[in-house]
Image (spheres, rainbow, N blue to C red):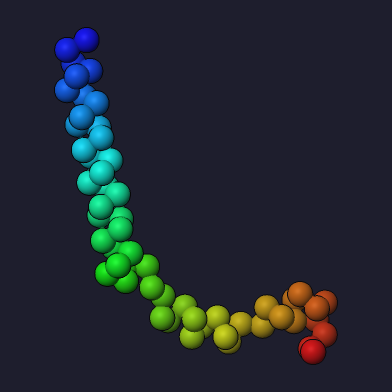
Length: 55
């Protein structure tokens, strides 16, 4: 029973630390993909959706 009194606050603290690191990385732009948008425009996905017919 004494161990759980230490483990719960440690687990909550590590969870909050991980959440804080994730939110920091979102605000820092770590998940932005400027090259992906430039490459996506070159793909011919619209031809596959229309059965190979251009619009």
